[in-house]
Length: 76
Image (tube, rainbow, N blue to C red):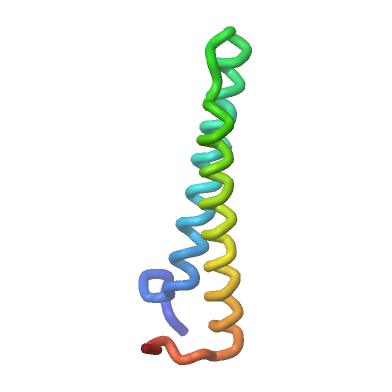
């Protein structure tokens, strides 16, 4: 059994959880600014961030699928 320090899938999941938490905090701050009448983040930036998050989730799904199939860790 590997510990969290050497398990790349677990590390990726932990980083993803941290990123989602940061996004939630940013959303809360944005809503606070909106309530105060300040300008919000441009839609294009939000769309770009959403695309990056979708791509990251896709890579994580592939990594998890390979891990569950028992794919070799090192491939060229």
